Image (spheres, rainbow, N blue to C red):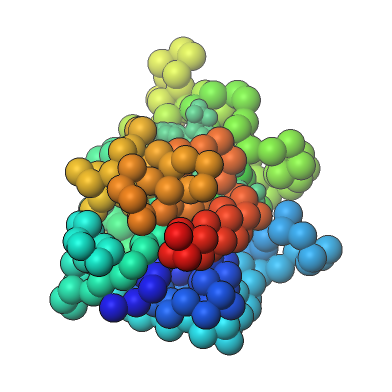
Length: 302
Ligand code: NAP
């Protein structure tokens, strides 16, 4: 029986663990994949205060983890599969058994969305990727494409421009969702060619991997074959809320919380990208984590 179990070791979960650990609550953080979440696989984080030159995401998340552990939090690699209220708190079913806590924080974040086009699954790991910082190095001096028009896509394109021979940024309209600084930097980069008003029809290749992709122009309907060896898909996120969808109130799969970040189940809180809200940044996830850590401490005192 722990005082608090935190699901997810990203910026929100680790920040909350720093607060609950310092409040002397026994704190267990469960992580199903990799500490740091999406921030941990970001090459350069430039808008997190305190690092005027920017910081590598994996380095920043290693610091978060060390700080959480220094504050007494235990981190364990185990996936949460379900949670239910019991007399003394919340029972969590995990990939290794059952755990119990007086309060739970869901900070499982969001995962990359798939494009759902022919060839995407077939060439996954053989040219198709969802993470340039993880897989970009395989495409040294090769032509690659990035799909999407948000901050992730633009940052992936910028990162790949130092590795690939040519980067195509494929976006389905002319305006970008990404912030203006990132877009301006991308437009000024001679190694990045923009393919606007285009959608991906198919990703094609042979036994050795991806060789080309077929694009369709959404304005005039024309098609174009683009020779690429890597396709990086960055078309947004889907919240990792499937395991609590039948337990907690959600909106478009994001968890609905009150102003103390408590969900519809008493004793269960949510923080970070998994919450229904407008801004999803490392800084806002950290803010959520701090708020949830304090709210949980007060809730357990009550
Ligand atoms: P996002 O902002 O939701 O952008 C997704 C992009 O993919 C949009 O441009 C969207 O096009 C496009 N898209 C979606 N579905 C598509 C489809 N089926 N086919 C083609 N294109 C499709 O997602 P994100 O870039 O992953 O960012 C998620 C959050 O993290 C955002 O809040 C973002 O600001 C934040 N973030 C911040 C930074 C940073 O450095 N500050 C870095 C990464 C992420 P439309 O625009 O036409 O809808």
